[in-house]
Length: 416
Image (cartoon, rainbow, N blue to C red; front, top):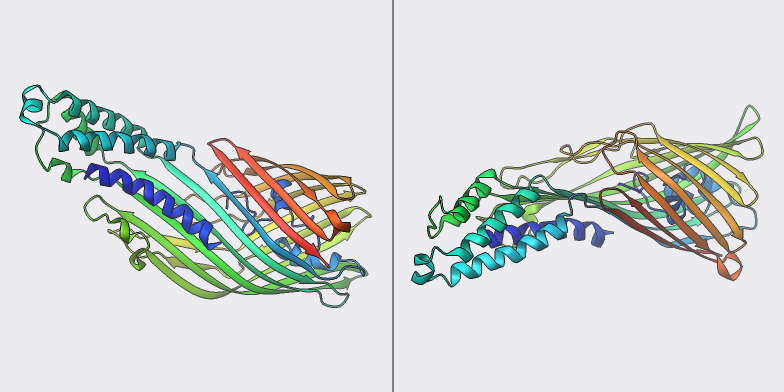
């Protein structure tokens, strides 16, 4: 039974992450990944190109030039994982120890009992030590993918957008009584009784939220007191799947991983909107609001545990400066990024730069921080390659931070 417990923890972690990656927000600025913007610290509200504006600020679609035609993003994708406690490695380590413990129990003989079963005691002691290290451990991941088609024009540029994004959290819930029992077996103060392992109560909780948006964006430039102001809006159909994989050693069954009893779903309507304006020769200011309609969606109750995923308006302001080959950008969230109610919220700020070394090569770097210090701050970097007279755009980005945080983003685009 102990072996089942720890295998469950490992599978719960994989289920949470696979649910995110196969469907398709630490680095992603809210609900999108864009390799160019993510390389620049997750900015983009005022610095996105017209071809990827639908991902960050639809108002910037009006920045297309008369010679620009259709743009296709196929795809934009990214993922970031934070594993501060090295949960993956520790589960691997304890799985080996559990195997050894089970093997010793399976081969247990009268001779082993008379000799004081030192191998069983050693394995139990190792498990107790590793359980102590697992106590309170957690891992977190975000991922997203998007497909978009943008059609610019002088009157009403528009775009079709499909994007999926998600977050996964896995927590190890170690019962102190398990450690007490295993240490008792190790030091001989608790007799080895057949079936006593059935009293182990440690478990794992894996939560994942997967959101898919299907939207149409439109934008238009207005003249307000003689000053050009662009406005963009993205009404969208929003489908949400929630996974609450909470289980104990008493009812764990690997075949139940994809069971509908761990999954709930909800479909609703939402909307994104953005505003952008230029001032001076080099400056652009923008504001976006993502998911302007608040929604609370409950997970299924599993083994007495239920959580709620919170969709809340995320308002971000951005400022960019562009001159020749150099672009500087900064974004600040004015509202918090909400997730599950059991998780702490975050509020991000990012800065970044792009330098276009050649017509077909751009280098980028940036930094992104959580103003609430609940998420890991990351350094970002990347490059963009635009061969074939800028017909093809390949953008790559990566992120790295404390707490074993790593991320990677890729975007492939075509301009016709």
